[in-house]
Image 1 (cartoon, rainbow, N blue to C red):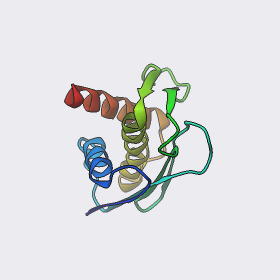
Image 2: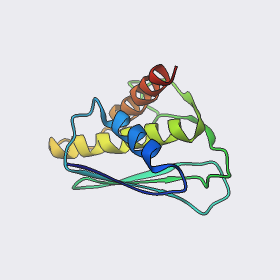
Image 3: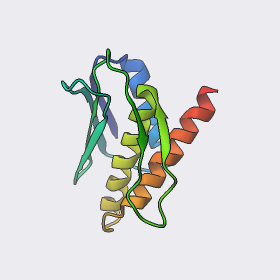
Image 4: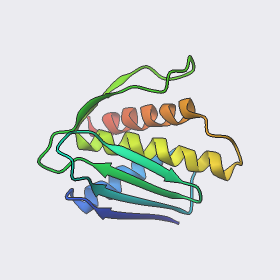
Length: 132
């Protein structure tokens, strides 16, 4: 079961739709996603995965415009750096990245960051295609 809890200031219906879309090609179940806003006054989005299927995403406050370029871990297999536009793309990228860690954990595989970065890249591309 996918459980999504929104404790951010962003609209719950929109948050849940973006999270489900970000998880679409990851084939993960029994995952808990907590979305919240952090108190810092910058546009950074953060995520963390806890073994067993718990993901926490911290978005910037609703009155702070998130902006950054996603810089994948420095590996030759990594996707190219890409710009994240708006809180929706930040959420999609971080959820996909952290949820891919859950997929690795379920398979008994080691953490391979560039695979997670590719999941983030694909989630943002899918979001953009569906939003167009």
